[in-house]
Structures are given as C-alpha cells and as structure tokens.
Image (cartoon, rainbow, N blue to C red; front, side):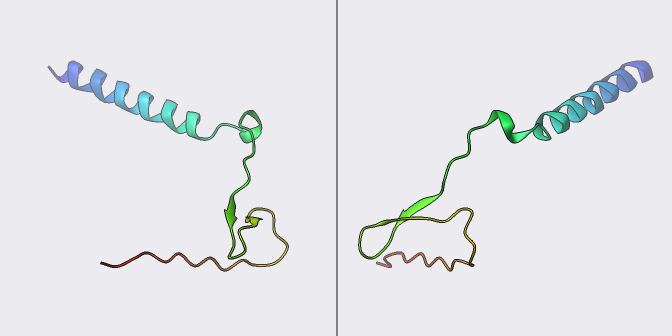
Length: 63
C-alpha cells in the first residue's frame, strides 16, 4: 500500500513538472496580437507597445 502511494505521488509531481514546463514555453511560436479598442471618435487605438502610459476607463451601465 505504501508503494502505491509513493508511485501516485511521484506521478503527480512529474505531471505538475510537465505542466510547469509547458507553461514556460517560448512565445515565438504564438503570433503577436495587438490590443486595439475604439476611442470616442470611433478610431482604433492600439494599446500595446506604446511609448507613453495609457489610462483605460471601462464604464458599465448600472440598472
């Protein structure tokens, strides 16, 4: 019984380690997507790779 618990714990540790390595993959495989929103005039504004800080307000309608 003790050996079964030890094997199960080893399996869980190995699975957690593999999940950790998967999350640490390089981003070169994923395409970069720009985060864009519409401003008050209806023009698209890109929020990524900006030289100045951007303040973003999000208003929701309260019933």
